[in-house]
Image 1 (cartoon, rainbow, N blue to C red):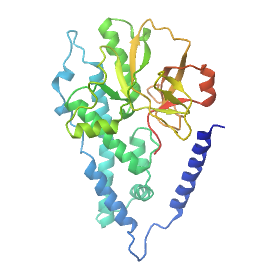
Image 2: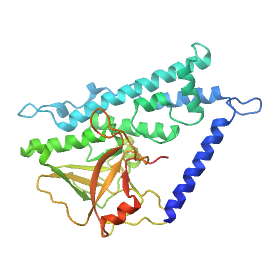
Image 3: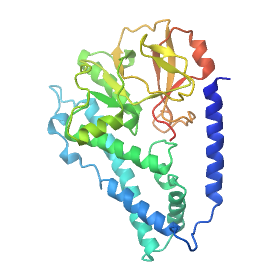
Image 4: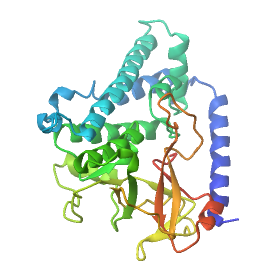
Length: 337
């Protein structure tokens, strides 16, 4: 067994034990200097509310992004953006309204309903409340990391809406990444007047890494982030923010490689998703599945898409694809921590 697989197993077992201990511990602190559960939840509610905007206002978006072309068609990625804004606003409404109500319940100004109590208990355990998870995208993160991730997603969408399309898109930041991928194909199909069903993606890996946390920090300081490192593509889209599971990346040869000991989920370099109607898959490519979470399992939604699987990425490799299939190598949109 690979050394990393043993580490992953032990980590999973440890987290299960810790979560079990947290679930059975008393909810109230009696005496001493420790805070009560009410105080913890009230402070956490205040903290989350201070981080989140009331909504993403599409009226503040750049008007030129929604201007139709000579055939009366709006840019497909702008349509994707508007759909993402609607989804995030629905999630924000659920989170903000429930936190306001739970603060009232703690103060004794409202009834602590069964639904609010479930949210209360989840916050104490640093878990994402079921009510929020049902209105959100798939995620296995604990509450603190989940809120931080949501803040990054909102900044990514807000910046795109108010400033311009990013040079590289944070694929992990989408509520529905499959819609973004379809939008990229549709733009190419319209530009070259080819059937969208005839298009396949050519996955070209660029030898640069891009962390969305670094991008967000640069944007807050009103600075450009590695804009000169690589050009904006004429066709297709650049994407970043993915992680490799059960493998690594050889940046020198620009191919998939075995994972280094102790490096569990290394980042994937930026990829150029280039639609190509004549693309024939090379023999040295591994059709690597991309999942939203490390759980990998999903169900078929009403849109006909999986709730977890996104797309197969054809990655270059010096080894036969059976080697990676045996290891269960995949790409992930986000980690579980």
